[in-house]
Image (cartoon, rainbow, N blue to C red):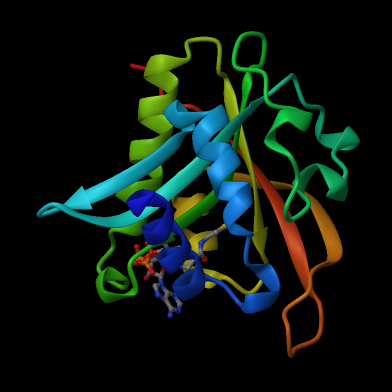
Length: 174
Ligand SMILES: CC(C)(COP(=O)(O)OP(=O)(O)OC[C@H]1O[C@@H](n2cnc3c(N)ncnc32)[C@H](O)[C@@H]1OP(=O)(O)O)[C@@H](O)C(=O)NCCC(=O)NCCS
């Protein structure tokens, strides 16, 4: 419960109100896929989180906006037994720690952890808002490349709609 409070506090700092996930969405993620609900700690404080799902084989040409919809039920596609595509649903870092190049290690820590635990994973997908520059730079830095775009996907509360960019990258393998 304390984790959920912290997750929601981070969500509020990270996104426009029009993009906030509801508390029950995170509660379901933690319950259904605790292994993919990753928290980063520093000096005992939860300073960030990354949430994942494992999807079946995905073809870039068949990706649809509703696969990524805000509030979607993780059980729609999540299949940790047969799935081979890691879907990174959310990533947030505490605002007090932003701008110190911690985003890439946070992201890569997630990829490495999930690749170690789930051998069958071969690639990862995510959807990023075209205006979220730090996030896009991190994903590019991790070798992710754009594979699809959804015009007007993001609907901030008091601004015009913004484009969503789907990016795919390989999982690190040692
Ligand atoms: C995304 C997030 C975790 C990145 O962490 P961060 O501490 O802000 O970013 P970093 O310091 O690690 O920098 C990442 C890159 O963005 C650049 N950057 C950081 N702030 C920037 C800014 N305001 N404008 C432009 N570029 C910026 C950095 O130079 C770096 O690029 P480089 O590696 O090419 O030099 C953090 O900003 C966050 O939680 N944002 C809110 C939620 C969010 O957008 N999540 C992504 C969901 S898809």
